[in-house]
Length: 257
Image (tube, rainbow, N blue to C red):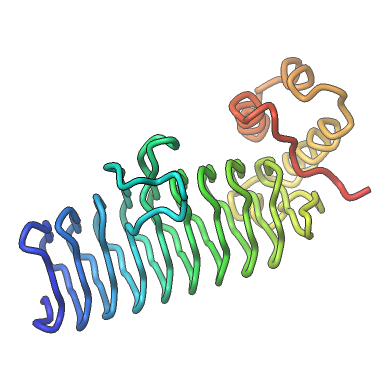
């Protein structure tokens, strides 16, 4: 199942039922899990470990040197989970020593044409990252995040579970769970109603969550507000954990003034 027109290093570890098409290059320290497919013209390098049932479309560049001038060739890593799809020209960088040494992508996500995932990013499950989105280094995405096409996410940004970023948005602040963000620079537009309904939340739960988020925006101190907020439902619990674990030096996306 491996084309004789491809170059696979003898030390690379290739799992069972892996398909590798024409003109692919796989480096020495690459590990590819069972049932993956490299369609053609795919380049995978670095200390890269890939799980099962991932598919890489033509001209993907995976596990390449970070776009960071501080990187001096130190040993760093890329880890990819299972059942992800990387469309044409997707680019995923290794980690850096300053950022924990590893870029990590979990499971069941779609990375569309031209997506860039920078060094040391930590990405959850069930993501949809649309065409030409650029995710800078050190970003953290919780599960179920959707990023619209041609958007850019600033380094060290944290995006909460179920958030949706509209197309052509510049995200330079942290994004609360299950919120809808758009604009350049980005601002809060509404609760992510579609995302919440897809996850099975009822209308009353959604209304209460929106009220909670609006009260958070109006509070003088986020941490103080969160400290008195009851985690007696799933959405409040998600919000509380997000605020408690975010970088306190970075603001959240707020309504446009």
